[in-house]
Image 1 (tube, rainbow, N blue to C red):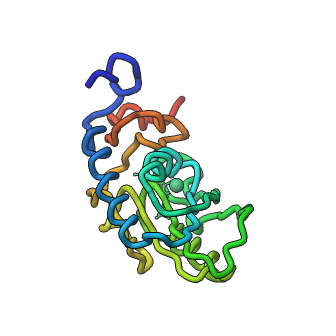
Image 2 (cartoon, rainbow, N blue to C red):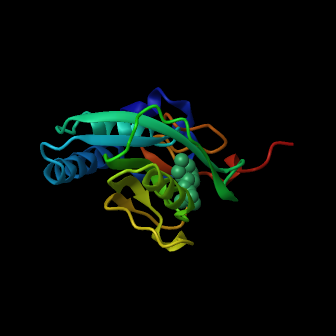
Length: 189
Ligand code: IMP
Ligand code: MG
């Protein structure tokens, strides 16, 4: 991989789970599906940042339906790899979503707590419909009933980084999805 020379943190990966090429190909297929479903309809895309930033940027450039974009901030990981209970959602949406078809975009569907809570919030604000598109789905980890309509890759129960996903706010810029070498999870002393 050419990027290996330019991004030193790629060496922190134990292995690559989803390559840059595979991500690109899958996003194209997801966008085609979404384009078919919403053809000619007005869409409001809500990306959950920071995690969804890179995925949303690549996906949106392939959507052909008229759309508006807004972002929400949600966090459930206080630090490291452990979820810290109920997600905190910062509701600073600028767009009025009353009566709108909403497509929620996030990096990964894990326990489902975040997307479950965000969907409730958007429906309470009057969204006509809410569908979800995630790049990754860790199906085995679900603790609330939630399924996304559009899923890039179903992955095993491993903590992953790259392509928007972080470990303590690092690694979001890696062009692929990978699993860190154990030594990089070790707490700093
Ligand atoms: P959920 O509420 O448990 O579904 O968690 C969703 C959020 O947790 C995602 O948007 C990510 O920010 C974060 N998350 C879950 N699994 C991972 C992972 O393997 N790597 C990095 N972040 C993760
Ligand atoms: Mg996130």
